Figure (cartoon, rainbow, N blue to C red):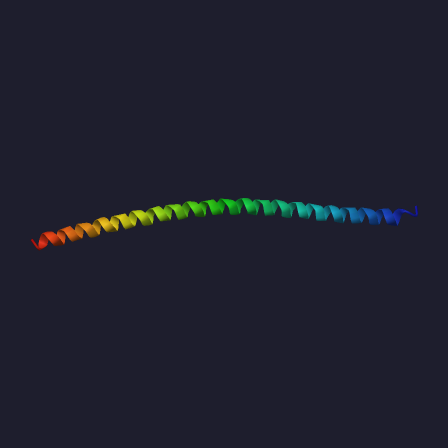
Length: 79
């Protein structure tokens, strides 16, 4: 048949287009996964930052209490 070379060429182009479409689907899936992972990591980072801020606040509070105790002890030494 005289159409044979053209149908073979058409099938070849179809399979190339399908291969590209499959690659694009995989890239989209990977991008979506990376976006989900990134969102999760940002949430974790926010949690760590909040926890760190709380620990810094507790540390400052403890430091001030200790400094106050030292001041009272020094005042008692001088009496």
